[in-house]
Length: 251
Picture 1 (spheres, rainbow, N blue to C red):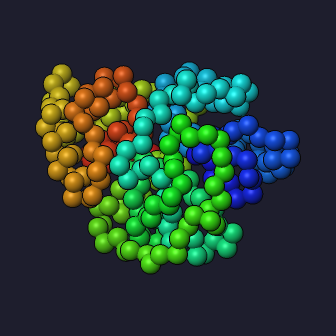
Picture 2 (spheres, rainbow, N blue to C red):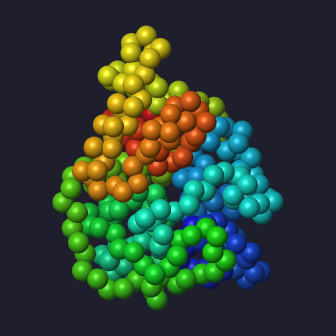
Picture 3 (cartoon, helix red, strand yellow):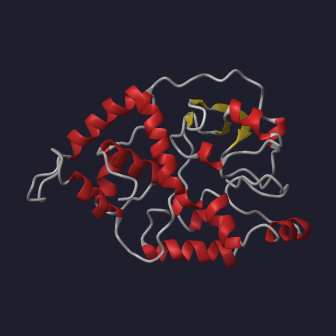
């Protein structure tokens, strides 16, 4: 999902087949690497991949025009995430309207700037859609902003935004499973010996916690187990576990 104000030939997930004029325009503003890292959803899909797989994904996107579905897992969008979202107050302030990529993060329901609920547009966010550009000015309806008064929901939105925007590490290969185990080490979900974990209790407590926040797509037991075993590294699964455990973004 690429959100750039000044190009009209960009696709929803990453960079589509650009015509010469569009490519020249973009090259004058950003390097291709900067474009992928800071103006697409790459940090969401690749952030927690093993180091070599993450590097390979970036290189293939930059130089080989590869299908993103072959580089990392792009899960189907679920309820409440099937259309591009926007903040009514951001839309009023922008002048020239554009899609904000942080509003499209999985589980994002709130604009962290205005602390109001995000609205759904009529533009599909499905990754199987053909390369097309849907100008925000034609799809952002004028609506009254609905304040979000749920403090936990606001903190979670700020957390996943901070994780998404944090610099990506292309030097160290620290498995996300090891980082999460470290986060569990001082909780009731992992014995001090580290030999026994209480994953089912963790998931049950997470479901209760996130239901109060209003997240529909709460992680399952199987997803958490696979993540802790190092077989899964989905952004929303990792963030839900880490936020619930109280882990700082810097970890």
